[in-house]
Amino acid sequence: MQAALDDWDDVHAALAELSAAVLDEGADAEPLDVRALAAPLPRAYEWVDGSAYLSHIALVRKARGAELPKTLFTEPLVYQGGSGVLLGPRDPLVLPDPEWGLDLEAEVAVVLGAVVSSNYPANRMGALASRFPTCRFGCRGR
Image 1 (cartoon, rainbow, N blue to C red):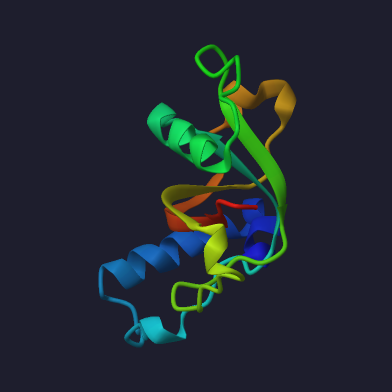
Image 2 (image 1 turned 180 degrees about the vertical axis):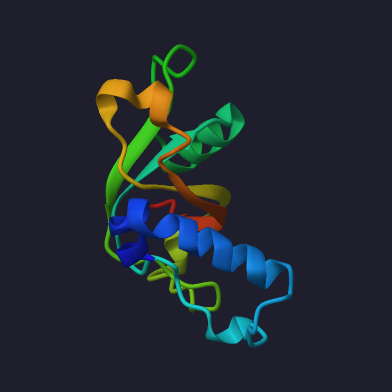
């Protein structure tokens, strides 16, 4: 996936054709063994998480004993960070200490190719490489 993203302009048309052929069941493809699936990006350069559900933000902050941001109702709440490990759909979830609590969230991942910031509104859909459901977890006590 990372190699495809790195060369997205050169490979996305061929990948779209292959995907359409497999979905139309006309391609010579083997059945998918979901047990063999790994994370599409085991590591990514970064992630950006936009929090949209105010009730969820309030619950998570309360569990951590943290105050709500003063700008919660006027500015989007966005987290950005590095992603050292992204788990696959059947990888074990390891909680270091049950006392920390577990925060499990269903999310939508959007994978972008190159985005030129000077004309972002005009090119944003051209940068969309993939989207898929994902699940994020964190430890509330940490």
